Every structure is written in C-alpha cells, then in structure tokens.
Length: 143
Image 1 (cartoon, rainbow, N blue to C red):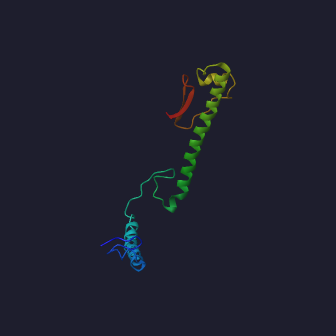
Image 2: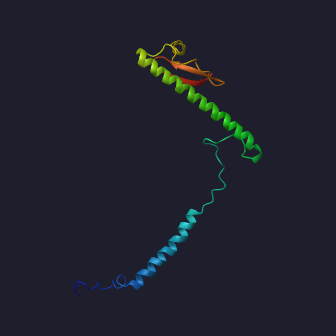
Image 3: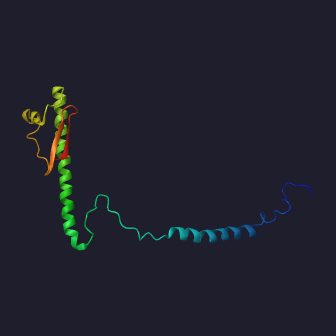
C-alpha cells in the first residue's frame, strides 16, 4: 500500500468527513455542560456566617437593633477619626520642629511652649498619647 499526498490514509475517513466531526463536538458539549452545572450549583447555605470586616458587630442583624448598631458604628468611626487627626497634626508639628531646630522635641510640651501647636490635644477616652523622642513619632494606645 502506498501513500499518495493529498489523499487520506486508509482508516482515516472519519476524520476527513465533517458529518462525523460536528456531531462529536456537539456530543462533547452536551456531556460537559451538565458536569459544569453540577459543579457550580453546590449548596453553601449551611455554612455559618463568620463575623468580620469593617461593618461587623456583635448584634444579630435584626432590624430592631439597626438604630443601636448605626450609633455604635458612628461612635467607633468618630473615635478612629479623632485618633488619626490628632496624631497627624502632632506628626506635622514634630517634623516642623525638626526642620527648624535640627532635632526632635524632648516631649510634647516643648511643641506647645515653642508655639508649634496651640496645645497638646486630648487623647480619646480610654486612650493615651505616647511620644517616642528618638524616632519622633506619636501613637495613640489604650491606657
């Protein structure tokens, strides 16, 4: 038996006929589609909700608790904002002091005495300001 270019090999007639190939492709997709649907339709509703993220509270999510949850969120957001603003203004004052004097202030009172800040800001309730003179940083930490 000899091979002639341009002619199919014996036994390969199925691969050269579109009427055999198209039904095979269709059959492949018909078999694959139910498998993909079954894999994507898993039931995850039995998993308990895990609290976390920025809006997590200890409440059960009841509409009756919504006003209390809202006010609690406002209070914690305000406290966080106060911490950020206070340390930012103090950090800027420390940087200015360092540029003018070539050193960090010994304590926060020196910033107020030299008029870099009008007064030392009050820490939020239950917190205190901790100043590191070597690094020139201020942190708000729990008391």
